[in-house]
Length: 411
Length: 224
Image 1 (tube, rainbow over the protein chains, first blue to last red):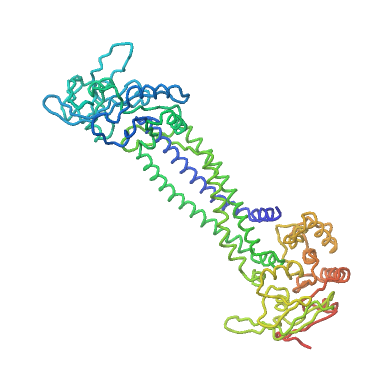
Image 2: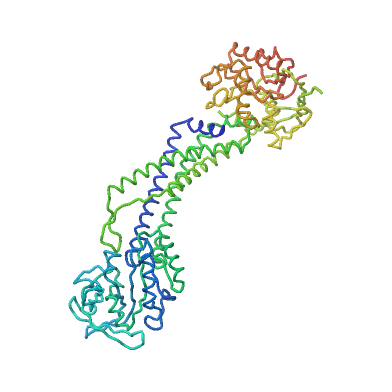
């Protein structure tokens, strides 16, 4: 306590210099927290976009379903009773919003004159729209009809990726024929009306993809199986808990969370984290150099005092430690001030709702958000306390190594 | 055995700007306990160097210094710190008080490395300040004290750890006559009541008159 008080008095000795050093650290804290808050908001936004973009919170399939290779269509699909059982069980869990089934298939699509390969998806359109308002954004015609159990609806519809439609030369209202191999190995075909054209924003997908109502896909493939059950939750944070609980009930099914199904997310996170690390390191280095300079002046002008204190038998280590405490105190003052300012600024920016230009592949402006949580505050404040201490390390090392007689002669 | 300090064949050379200066040349001195002694000589005669070496603030090139029969090992920093902390006290010409600490806190500072409790430390510091007549200035910062008062705080600080020997490097050099006499009275009184030995470097005749023993140095050589 006596040493802490001594360090505190020394910090207050030259208030202007302490203010400058603490101010530099405060700016560093603001920069680090703003960057961390922005990156966190970006990660969160990307995560939710990924989930709502069709991946869901997790997906359930037969063992091997997610490995990608199947000898025959629907070879690794979920039998209808398994799909029903897992859907029913999931619906009983509090945080589960809903679950929906999908059939993934491929084949040939023809308009009579031209035939091209397609990648198809049998979906429950009503539930897909519940997951994402941007489900298959229609650019011409209409979306797929909702499947209603109590009402007869003409489900013989298909929506095509816009480039697939262009290659075929079809438009909404035209007829196309889908040809594929059934689960039994025979060929099957179905004539459907083009309901609409959609775009995913990714040219490769728009050139190959189409969607049909789930019963149509099952009928074409000659099965009641489904490829995957997609589970959608109220909040992303509980994904792993619910997944592992459900996995215990269905050990023979394979379950993958959204993170495993969206490898690009991890790549983006890694990229952003690398950028943030480099930027953070530069900020820390600038703060460190600046505060080291201030600490150097502060310590060197006390050379005679250091000599005097050492003449009393106070050890070098003790003295050096006290300089580190001084640096740490300045770090704490600066970082705390910066944290308060960063919090206030983030609140203001989040409330004002500043819009950023659309990122590549999107046509909607995105809000500028800073999501700074408690762990970031704790981390940045701790880091800058350490930086403050390190900034005192070199000057103090130099000062306490000086011969006592030389230090006492210092003017 | 009444011998406090024994210096034998002490030599010290400095190199400055290519020149070699022999600050101490084969100096041998013995000092008894409870003495009030002074080292005199003109500027550059080696007085401060001698005190610095005795005070373990500097190392001799050759020779030895023994405190109560125990030779000082100048290469053992831990032991030197222990000697400075428990057996020696220092009074500097410029007082060298820590400006951010009050008078009583300055006096407490050398006791920080002791095992005393906070209250014991404070009590010792208050007693030392009382002994130098500054009981009413305990909470004053150095800049609120006169030069004479500051030097008395420095004396209290030197004595707080009850050392065997207090070393003073020109302690009255920056004081007016009145303050210098007051300081000498205080130190003489403490020497007699506490039995603490004092060794000053000085060419102040006021100290030399009152010193029981005077050693004279000229060009680093002890004059007989």
